[in-house]
Image 1: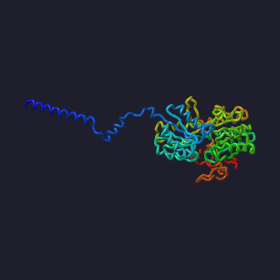
Image 2: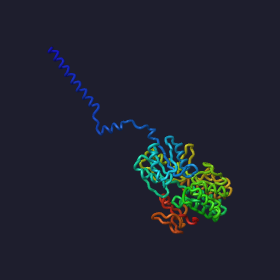
Image 3: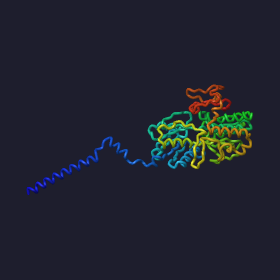
Image 4: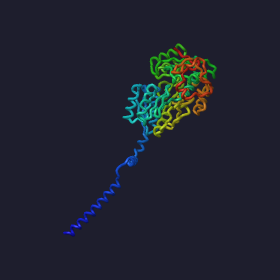
Length: 432
C-alpha cells in the first residue's frame, strides 16, 4: 500500500509538471495583445477586393432639366460616355438642383449610391459642395467655374476653353452675314459670358477684316440662363429691329433657334451639335455649332480619384489641345466645331459653305489645326481693348472705354481669364 501511495504521488508530480509545461507553451503561442501586435493583426487582415478598390461612382448634379437643354444635356452625355468607357465607373445624377438642395442631394448620393466624385454643373449651385469637402475627405468634389476660383485639395474647379471654338464660329458668322448684323441672345453679364462672347466677337471681326466688310455684333441680355419667352422676344427684336441675319445665343432654351427657323436666317449653335445629337434643326438653318466634351475633364477627375492622388490638379481649364479617346475609339478634344455629326470645316453646313469665301474656310481650318496643336490662341494673338461696358466686380471696376487692358501677343493667365475678364471688347453693341 505504501509503495502504491508513493507511485501515485510520483505520477501526480509528473502530471503537474506536464500541465505546467503545456500552459507555458500555450501562453508563448498566443501572447496577450499589445498596441504593436494589434497593428500587425490589422495589417494581416484580408485586403478589400481589388475590384472594389478600383470602382468609382460619378454623381453629377444638374442645375436644370437634361432633356431639351444643351448645357445639362452635354454634361449628361459626358457622364454616360465615362460610364461607357470605364466599366468600373458608374454615372448617377439628379436634375433641377438648386443651391439649397446641393448638399442634401450630395450627401444622399454618397450614403445611398456610393458616390466618390460629386459634381455641380453650374457655379451658383456647385459652390456649396466646398462646405462639405472636409467632412468627406475620401470624396472628390467639383464645380464649374463662373468667376469664383475657391478650391480645396478635394474640391476641384473646372471649365473648358470654349472661346477657342467660339472664335471659329465667329469666323463663319462674320463671313455669312449679308446685312452686316450678327446677334447674340445672351443671359446676363458675367465673366463666363463676357469671355465666351469675346471669343466669338474676335472671330467675327477677323472675318470682316479679311473680307473687307463692315459687321456689327449686337448683344441683348435676357437676365437668366433659361427663359424661353424672353429669349424669343429678344431674338425677334434682333431680327426685326437690327436686321440681324446670323443669330447665336448664350442662353439655354431652343427659342432663338426657333426664331431663326421662322425668319429664315442662319443660326450658330452652342454647347452641343444640336443637329447631330438632338435633331432640333437641319443644316439649312444651323451653319455650325460648337460642341463641349465635359468628359475630357471628368476623365481627369476619375483618373485622379482612382489613383488616390492626394494632390490632384484643382483648377482644370482645358482646351482644344486636350483630348480623350471615347469607348468607340473616337478621339475628341475638349471643345470643337461640330454639325450633323461632322467636325472641323466639314461641319460647316453645305448650304452655308457655298456662301463662305474659300479664304475664310481655309482660315477656319488653319486656326483649328493650330489650336489643336497648342501653337495659337485668339486670346494670345489679339489685344483686348475695353468697350466701357461689362460687369464691375468687387475691387475690379470696368476699365474705361478705349483702354488697352492686354496687348497683342501676350497670353492672359488662366486665373485672369476665369475670374477677372469683366469687360466687353471695344465695338460690341450692348443693347439696353
